[in-house]
Image (spheres, rainbow, N blue to C red):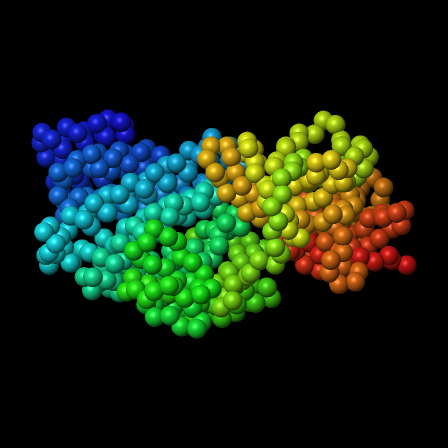
Amino acid sequence: MRDQVTNLGGVFGKKMPHPLADAQEVRRIITELPKDNVFKAIDGIIGWLESAKAAEHLGADRLYGAVSQLEDAGREHLRRLCRDYLHTSRLSRTEETRLWSISHGYWSLLAILYERCLRGLAPGGKMTEASLAVLPALCVRLIAALGAILKWERFRCSPPANAIWQRLGQALLAAEAAGVAMRPVVLGQGERASSPAQEYQKVMIFHAASMDSLAPLEIELAERLIEHFLSGFVFAAEARHDCVYWVDLQLAQPPLRLAQMPREAKPSLRFYRPGPAHAQLCELLHSIERGGELPADIDLGGQYPGRTLLPVLRHLVAYLAPVPPQRQHDRHRVRHQVTVLNGLVNAFVVFSGEFGDRPAGLHMENWAVDNVSRGGFGAVVGNSPDWLRVGALLTIQPEGGDNWLLGIVRRYYREGEGKAQVGIETLARNVLAVELKARASSSYAVVGGTPGLLLENRGEPGEVRVVLPPASFDLKEALVCVIDGRRCQLSPMALVEHTTDYELARYYLSQPG
């Protein structure tokens, strides 16, 4: 269907009026979109957008009217597709790529067409009253589309091209030049009001929050939380001592930390500071940590347990603080290979020691390490496996050694087809594989145990961290295990983090009398 519609672009662009130039025809096209098939509906919309892109003589006013209506018609379909991408467990690489390509391509097309509308609204350099009337909504839609591109690129761990920041800046500068940057608009029924300046501010704060260490669902939740607290952040043309980031709207350059003032004062400079929003985020974090409920006015697009929200809130509180996290350890350039195993099961086999220093039969990856620090290291992955993502649990052996260490992927960037850069936090260099049983059932020999990993003590005396299978941690249930022939008890303290593959928790280790 899309190919057929796209081919019409060249025909209507040259020989006869394009269907999207007729308001009645646009309504008919939207009415005939499938209501119960997300993929066919989005495919149809993308086809018409591509045909509009090819119809070079379609006027800016008619183009904006048609494209904005098509966007509104596809909004709920895009939300459903995004939910499938974020919530479908164990998506295959093929299906993940398909969902990502549809969404990223959709927003990319919208941005291109809205930019064309913006250029065409002021023929001869003068804007009419009709153009001024649609300019606020056009700029909001354009900035939101460019922001969606950035978000989907973060979902897939792809570093965005710097040029997108110049495109964002041009949209905001156009709104400011016309005096409508702060004018709120509501794009559709049930949608929140927004202005071009607010929409840009949201994208800038999204960047400041350093989303590259979050999983896709966490990125989505973080963006929604930023949107909820948006009015508490400060985005201004004047620099103050408490500003954290700055950006030049004219440059193809992302926002930068304000380690020092820009070289020259320019009208296109904008500055961000946390303002009261940071205290509001801290208050919400402390409430959720104490077991409180999420306020009803915060729309996250669904219901999520505290264990899902806490890592996101802690991340935002840290990175949107008046003093964001600084690198704790210096990096040093190195060149060596490491052997890598994925997942808790492989880690348990390795650290049990029952199968030697290098167990046979396990699928091992070879990665090239290019930098190290006290906290971890960075590596280049030449052929990125399907399981590689932020939060992946790794068992790692340096080249030439017989020791293994445990790590977690904290940052992940795709660098073209199949190649990736990863940042790995070293969790522990001394790990003990143990069989864990609930204290109430530990006296029954027939009761099976749960595989777990005890990590070296880095906290308070007697405290240990334990890696468990998913959904194993229970704050009300103590565990027992055998260490060096002695029966030990693990009293639960807190869940540190959890993924679909494992949980990391804190316990108090003791030997019951």
